[in-house]
Length: 357
Ligand SMILES: *Cc1c(COP(=O)(O)O)cnc(C)c1O
Image 1 (cartoon, rainbow, N blue to C red):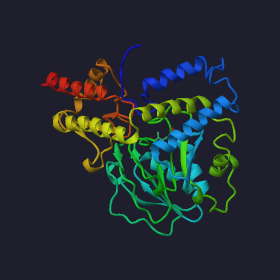
Image 2 (cartoon, protein in one colour):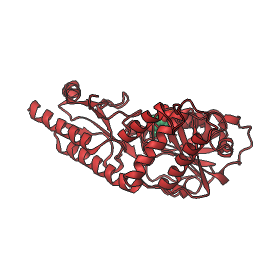
Image 3 (tube, protein in one colour):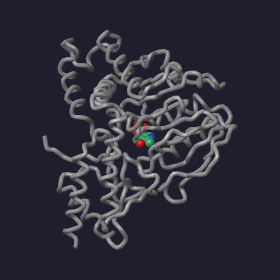
Image 4 (cartoon, rainbow, N blue to C red):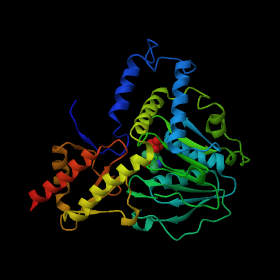
């Protein structure tokens, strides 16, 4: 197979070990003589996968007994609706930090009263709002910890006087998190923890049951907690790959170890962006994401954008074109992106600088 440096934003690079083990499980799963996608989800072999996956989540993120983790279909985008269905009674507050935050907010507005507590829309979401006060009369405060499109990130667990709800689609498992501070952490798997097709929710159990509306069965977090994520047929293959991805993460030392690696990888790339006169970062420095690194051609060099994209492609770089709403470039350097890929991109930027002089 051709080796590339994969900077895709999601779906994205996954650990080789997880891919290889998943291929094996497609050939013969746990000695059953069947592929993992051919066995009953009620079999003991499959139950063992579910148990192991859940246990890995709990161990890696140190999830307290007050919380439960469930695996769902429908992606993070359907959970935008789950959040409002399960938690919105009178009023909800959203931190508007980008497209994903706005989409989450839209679902709440569709069901009831929701408003933006603060927003960074004035500067195309290039920073995280600061100095706002979380109202105490809202049912929950919703944040998007990593803004995948703009490369900004809230890299700490904030104190909130009301239940805190976080979309962590693109930075889950990238750093240690104090789960006890959140009523809900949710996201799609396809950035840091697996393939598309499954999403996760870590729910504080006593935060549920506080709304008066009818909650459709499949949108009720409690149904999925009570059913141990098997109320209906779960997305078995994505869950299997997720379990293998988490096994890999545990094997390399867990979230503390990966956080150190992620900080180092992002620093290498940001240092080059700040040094290289051809490029400039788009996110406010203090809010820079360690997952998605966004940059553009520096003023005066804009005309070189396509040329750099072509050059990077010729050097094996994949997926560095920025999101259409920001332009320029975005290197997504999730957990499974090796340091060598980041170093290769930096070399590429340096070669391009020499070539363009
Ligand atoms: C990718 C992403 C989503 C959307 O996830 P889907 O699983 O495609 O619905 C939502 N929020 C954030 C922060 C994302 O990065």
